[in-house]
Length: 111
Image 1 (cartoon, rainbow, N blue to C red):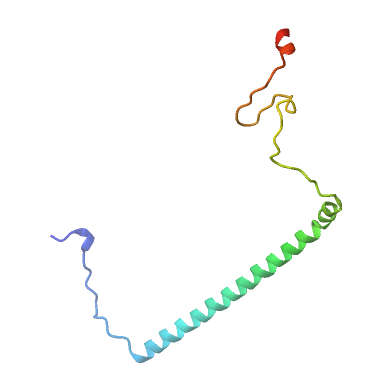
Image 2 (cartoon, helix red, strand yellow; image 1 turned 90 degrees about the horizontal axis):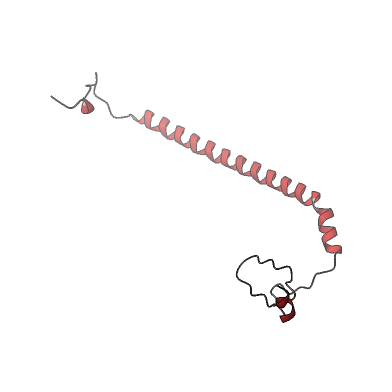
């Protein structure tokens, strides 16, 4: 007994090879489908590009006052990693790492 997964259903008529008219029609249909896909992709790409340009123009227009205000400020000259002495960090807050706080003798005697 054959497995139910591989049951073969006999066809009522044998398949005949496609004639020249069928091949020409299949070729024309394929060509029309490819042209339609290319046209759709070109239209979709242009819509995305125009939409992106409109969004960037809107964003640029809305942020012009902020850019003008930033240009008007004098540049800040800071040394981002300048070494600081423990006395300058008197609040005792450490964001990351370890800190050794040096306590003067007179302050240590009060405790």
